[in-house]
Image (tube, rainbow, N blue to C red; front, side, top):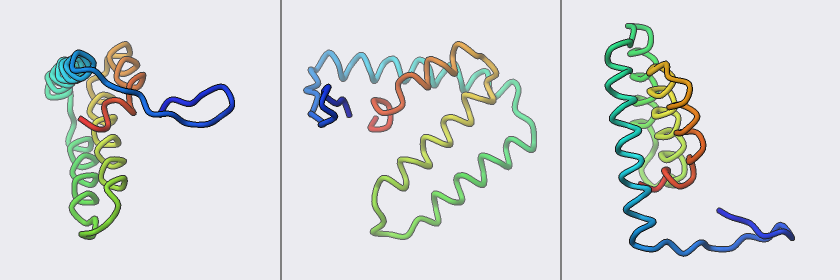
Length: 102
């Protein structure tokens, strides 16, 4: 969430174009990451992704959505790391809050 100079927070209004741009950028980044990760992934890395997914499945019903969102970002971060493309990873990491809700 953006904040003002005094440290308070304010809500950013997203336009239809903003939403379309963020969505299409995330899809493009994720597709590239998935293709590269699929070519490089090791058994140990598959197991690490499985552990994240199992942790997500174990989140009790009624838990704050933030718990699932946090693990979803950890999962995606791991895929981008496995893709082994520094600029792609930095592009992903520069947008985590915007992407967390798509």
